[in-house]
Image 1: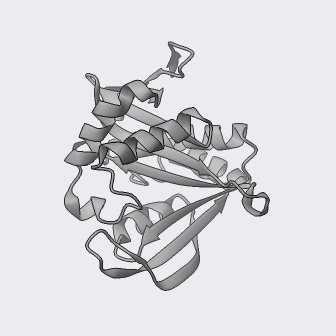
Image 2 (image 1 turned 90 degrees about the horizontal axis):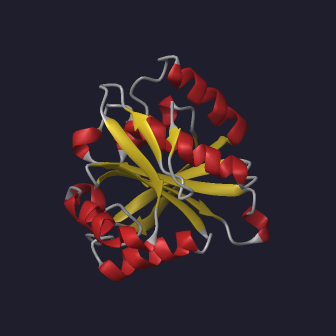
Length: 202
């Protein structure tokens, strides 16, 4: 069970292997360690991110937007080192005010240990608190593993936009949009906790 520690939203959680991780909302004080975490991610994975998170000014802006309430960012850390990052980005126009976009990245050494699901659960809680009705995930066509993980949690492909994006290497890729109703996410997470989605988003 989570242990509430500070108003910052810090919680202690245990992974499937017993490792204790700290879940905390991102603040400006996290800039250096979050930047270090992003830079340590495999280049093959960073190439599909929307922004160049190896640049200090980019990460600084992402954190600032979270502090200002334009997004919700949560960090998972062990021994003060970030090992996972989750974000809920909120639409800023009235047409999509009921939609939130989620992003989860887990350090390679912490995958398949349940951390991805913990981050998804926290993002779901944040979405529910913000009256979000539908969550979406956007990914590049080559991110097959991420797509499979989302499908295991029940996300369905809503659209495939051909040659709609360029990755960090300048290569044109399809953009895949997946979605899930918030009530359906709740059911999927309950099933995950019962072991039916053992490797989803780990």
